[in-house]
Amino acid sequence: MILKVDHVSVAYGKLRAVWDVSLSVDSGEIVTLIGANGAGKTSLLNSISGLIPARKGAVYLGEQNIVGQKAHRLAKLGVGYVTEGRGIFSSLSVLDNLSLGAYSRHNGWTTLLGDVSWFMRRKDIRDRVDYVYGLFPRLAQRQRQKAGSLSGGEQQMLAIGRCLMASPKVMLLDEPSLGLAPNVVMEIFGLLKRLRAEGMAILLVEQDAAASLRIADRGYVIEMGRIVFEGTASYLINQDKVKQAYLGQVWRGDHQTPAQEEAES
Ligand SMILES: Nc1ncnc2c1ncn2[C@@H]1O[C@H](COP(=O)(O)OP(=O)(O)OP(=O)(O)O)[C@@H](O)[C@H]1O
Ligand SMILES: [Mg+2]
Image (cartoon, rainbow, N blue to C red):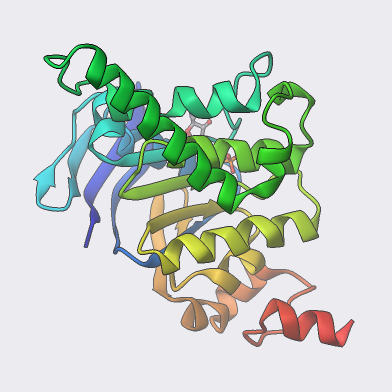
């Protein structure tokens, strides 16, 4: 497992938001964490990524226990985090936002070579930007445009692209579907599938359980800070309690692909 969360608890003063949570994500796998408002999803991601400390437990990236390390250091080690607010710089261009994403990748590169190193960095950033543009052609078309003028879906693509600039080993995504139209969500989830095929480890936090279980390999359900269900996506989809609480009326109970759904409508 590339990411292993081992009995982690998170608290704000006396309020405990995450209780004794264990989960894992492997390379080439999409794992979803599902839960209602206030269940502790963001708190868990914030502690994995080093933004807030865990009260208890350990987090392993590969063999290394990374718990207690600061966020910028974890970004460099390979923990990519696409936060819920997306955190892009509205007044900067698409290209500048992407270039900033490479910061943690280069922070710490040797400077002994002086200008040559600078040249290599530029080349490396350019190659990485081209990779992101390959994934999101819409960003390439808008590379000089201010990020704040992008559509919601494009801003989410930019946030994911910026995260990819640092070549993460694992990506944490906090509700990337929030506020987006279903076809845009499908586009972004399609991209996550492509990253999975390239070997990325993805932890996808979602309130939209129906959508996320459709693309996930495995999932965990969190309620009031505790994991209450876990298993393969098809197992979770068929649990009555999961259906009632998270899949709502629209769910038909079987594990349909988006293509099947489109064919029906
Ligand atoms: N900075 C904070 N200070 C104090 N309490 C907090 C803080 N952040 C979150 N909490 C509390 O911790 C609990 C879990 O919040 P969290 O944001 O992790 O939930 P969530 O599952 O991400 O919810 P949502 O789906 O609304 O994003 C909530 O009770 C929340 O009020
Ligand atoms: Mg949240």
